Length: 84
Image (tube, rainbow, N blue to C red; front, side, top):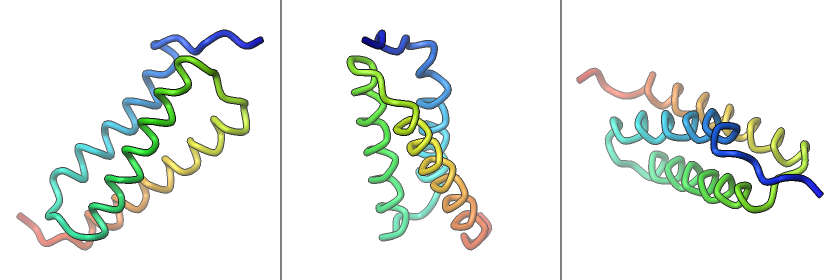
């Protein structure tokens, strides 16, 4: 049986999610921003479950790919946002 992931091993993933949430918070509320925030919150819940039940390598890889896509989507949205 796999051992639970330590907080130190989860920290980079949670940090990456936090960065997305901060960047989204700086944008004007819109349906697109709200949808992206909901995705980030889903990823947070997913990683919280990993503390008790470690994911398979495929599950970790899948989340990291989704998180990378979310970062790219946020960057595109930031590029469309009017300058402050």
